[in-house]
Image 1 (cartoon, helix red, strand yellow):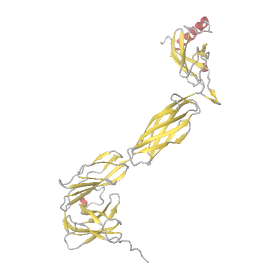
Image 2 (spheres, rainbow, N blue to C red; image 1 turned 135 degrees about the horizontal axis):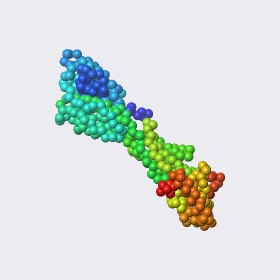
Image 3 (cartoon, rainbow, N blue to C red; image 1 turned 135 degrees about the vertical axis):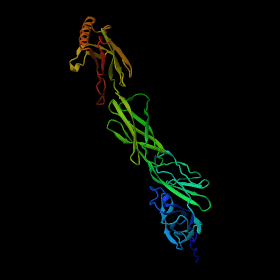
Length: 424
């Protein structure tokens, strides 16, 4: 019976990309651990089955070889360890053992090593997504390699630029090599702040373009930007009428689109708020006022002008249905709820569709169905009283037509406030 041969054993040893050292008293105190005499070893090793252990054996010429186990720094992808008290010039070699037991040896074994003077710069703080200009220093002609701590790197310059796609605290390593065994390393800490998303409401639309009426389904579309390219986001909409909903999100790098739908049952002016929140609970919002109109006729009035013998108001239909002609409009000097003086009552002259207005003037040009002499008399008395009070408030009250399906729009009595003729 045929038996398949056993799987080939892993006989490939780990590979050292490089091994470098730096003097402990030259490292940044905030990022390099204890300061003082000694050497920090840093090695980058790779192996298909995984590296299990990295050991450095060193001597400073006293005839005694000392072992040092290195620890793995996952954020930088390197193995590090400190040899306190070691001299600046030393002889060393490094060994790595993989999961299969294979042993790899560094190429620099048996070579005297003098660390290069390298400086990564001061620790820094910046916003996520913002480009950072690093300012390192080292020997001219040496090859510089930066590891930014987020899996990204840059080579060839002591002054690279880099932007972090996520907030956090990152250990940034600068390594320089002169190609003749001289290697130096320094580190700094980069604190990257999270930035809230920025939301902007775009369109608020209905199936039929135009004003929004009770019962219309409206769709709000907003966009947001976020400098943290790796941030995760959620979105929510507050419609301003007590209803709230989780909105639909279409994400892209650095932002996305937000959409949601809703219907209002009452006519009013609502404050619509759209928000986006990232995975660190930073929230950005935008707001917009939405005016919802009655589906039935709804008349509102506004003060236009006053003279010693006349008053003019504009009556506008803000409802969807057509308002008929001959709607009564009553004029008062002052607020009728506070004892204002009745002047007269007249009517609108024509039917009014949505947005259409009718201007009504009493006094100098009396409307039909009113006595000219009585109107002038009441106008004269009211204006004389207003002149003594130095100001006059005129209210035009229009009958509301807005009742549909048991839902009543807010009754309107928009006051027109004008100065008395003496103050005009």
